[in-house]
Amino acid sequence: MESWIERQRNILDFTLSSLLRRKGKNAALISVYTLVVFMLASVVFFIHSIKKEASIILQDAPEMVVQRMVAGRHDLIPIRYMEKIREIRGVSSVRGRLWGYYYDPIAGANYTLIVPEDPQLVMGKIAIGEGVSRTRLVFKGDALEFRAYDGSIIHLEIKDIISSESELVSSDLVLIPEEDFRRLFGGSRDYATDITLKIKNSKEIPTVALKIAELFPDARVILRDEILRTYDAVFNWRGGMMIVILAGALLAFIIFAWDKASGLSLEERREIGILKAIGWETSDVILMKFWEGLAVSLSSFLSGILLAYAHVFFTSSALFEPALKGWGVLYPNFKLIPFIDFSQIATLFFLTVVPYTVATIIPSWRAATIDPDSVMRA
Amino acid sequence: MRKSNIFLLGIMIQGFLLLLLFVHAAYTEKAAGPVLEEKREMVKRLELTDLCLFTEASYTRHLSQADLHTPFQSYPLSLEHFPSGSILQPPAMLKRMNGKLD
Image (cartoon, rainbow over all chains, first blue to last red; front, side, top):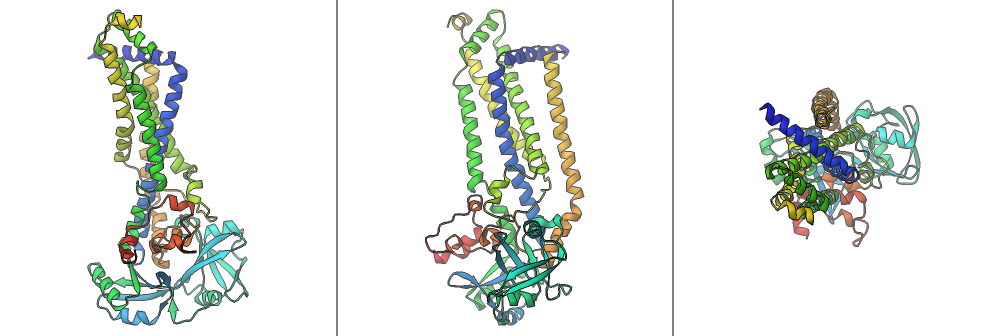
């Protein structure tokens, strides 16, 4: 056993010396390899963590949302719909939600205005998300002005800033009392933005949804399961940028593999010829190439994973931020919780290390089985 | 020092750091419990439906509340032009609910 280990270490010593002889080429190879693993791992870590966090925090989203559609668009829903919905067996509570968007021309940002069921929020007072506070440089006690539907200016005092810990759901929120909401947007008190429902027994949700669809053909029903599935599907591997990144990584690996599988350089073939001439067995040469592939791919893999983790969880995916931010002004400052598990690392390992190591061995086996004399004379 | 020793030491250090990542992840996940609970409570209290990730357009801000035709909401030939539209996929339920309109 000891002699086996010593043999491996001797071959590894020789392999590393051989790699160091072609420093520049191998350093470039390791850098690109690390970058590919880094990109892939960053995407995997980011997507998995955001999906997991969404699935946890949206578990308490409304069980059912009923919206009215007019000419194919979401429209205000009459409050009277609530009376009929309340009569449906299984419905435990019905509430008309008031919410909307407000474009702030000073910040160039869209806010989400919501009327909460909070008795402490009295007329003239609002609570704002950390993103709104940061963008407009307004703080607790300051006043924020809004231009109402009729052109009048409404000043609302900031009573509270919503905790920065919850920016992922609250960055652009403005919590506003109902009176101020109606002053700002006008509209009749007989209408709400949409209706939310609580159902006694979750098994009855599809039946209730069906009854609502029958009662109100102009309404659409959004279930909590669908909200949760939305966030499971939006970052699907087939989606836009994801496929671009995955395709880029795949192409890079095809180039790597092609470079290796298409044969060794003259220098490498000559080295193998000399080794065989001085008594190395074919198996020794293959072992050397195995160690070479492993040394390059394992060190690149581990570096790529470590860098990706630091990127996603310590720098809040700084490299992805411009893509995620888009044209949005109010981008939340959030730190993802590292929901990582062994299967993600194993998948990345089998996608990156194994193909490269295998691609290194095949051409070496071909070179190692030919006559050393002809290789050296080539 | 033999080159193989230096290499193996390097790999062992990287492997150790990888293990530390798992420890860090487990610790952070546990420590984030109250924060997650706070977010859940806020979602419940305010009846929120979406994450505040893409604020550039209403239909990217509230993905689960979007309509299938929202990219064309400005006018019929207004094609989807927001950058986040290239990252996201439309929710599957939209296709189901809007099937009759197509």
